[in-house]
Length: 166
Length: 283
Image (cartoon, rainbow over all chains, first blue to last red; front, side):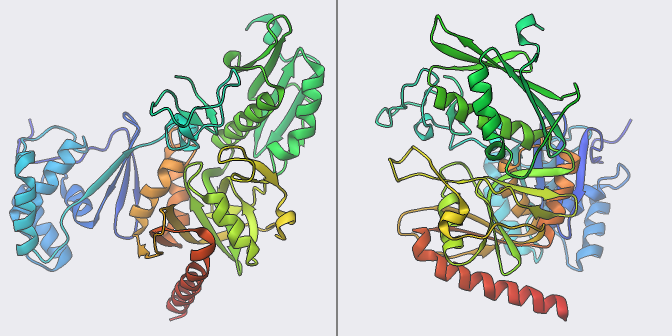
């Protein structure tokens, strides 16, 4: 059984695309895309199931040539954990409501970039060509009635310029 | 499959970007109109098919008693229309989305595309985000027209022309689109695939100044992804193509004011950044 303080990066059902500085990860189970900045990506890659938090800090310090605060690594692990990018959930290091304070402290103490993971749900094909998601952008409905732009109601979705139902 | 949904004669069969589509119906006059619209539906080129094989089928079922047309896609009813012109416009849009989603070896991004001095510029965005306005302003200033709807990107990260008519709003009213041939606006249409030199992430905001900042490759891809059609169908290929495209491009983000007012500033920025990037490559 693996130790709870040794995080392991998830590898199943993911598409991973390495970039010069960042890593893109696509979760095939949830159709979510994540962009890990350099710091998060380094932490994620160091989560090999053998490295303890101390080892991960050392890995990062070697890579970045700077001192790395433990809180920064723990914060990165929290972010990865929340996005299901670890193979098993690990205990949360910081409560969400304290994050901002922690971030401020780390930002002041650290010379390296704060960890960041940007995420979004990949759109379906129809939504990728949709208007802003509200019916006021639509040219009209199937029965020929034009959309009433004065109605402050979201009653449908505009897909390719057409109403896609209520 | 319901008997009357089987594509039977008369049937239009064509292939575009490797996607084979059959369109059948019980209303020959409508099918004739669709046939005539094929160049508009698949502006990147299409060929008619003679064999029986197809990947997707559409069926137009006229119901004279109810005075309407039902549209089926792969045997599933997807919409109905009373108005013929709306039916045809809807079908155009559905056919193009189908091609965009299932295109072989290409990634379709909902975006405007022009080439400025052999440099492809793509402007991803939602409908009504001002893509066409930007494209129209670019071509008025001498840019080559590639598309006002889709950036078609190949597995080398190069963008191909998808030169549909420019659909411009604001002539009849704010919602109705009027189609213009690019040539009517004095534009030449791109022929060869080009590497993407700049990705503009921008949205209209009244009186906003063009004040761009550059995004890293991954950040840029996350901005493009919401407008990328086949992501769910083929995420590995999509990410690979987007990475190839974005890693060679300058990715600039800013809100913008009226297209015609900001275009001179934007072109100045574009040329400066492209020269800078080219000289960095030479060094």
